[in-house]
Length: 79
Image (tube, rainbow, N blue to C red; front, side, top):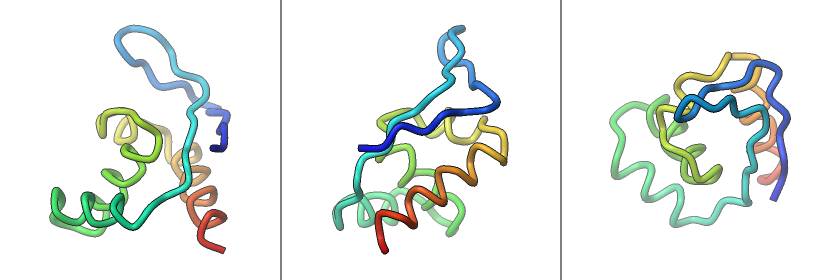
C-alpha cells in the first residue's frame, strides 16, 4: 500500500482529505471497474476509487495534479 500526499485536499463529509492510500491492484479490480463503467475515463476513476477505498466522487473532485499522482502510482504497481 502506498500513501499519496495530496497538494490540494478534497473534502469528504466536510473534512479535508490531504492524503490517500492506494493498494496494489488485482485482476478483479479491473474487471469490476469495467463492468460498472462505460468510458475508459470512468473505468479508471472507478478503479482508483476501489484501490483507494473511497467513493468515486472523491476521485472525481481531485485536482488534476493530484490525480496524475494516482495515475503515476498505479503505473508503478504494473512495472
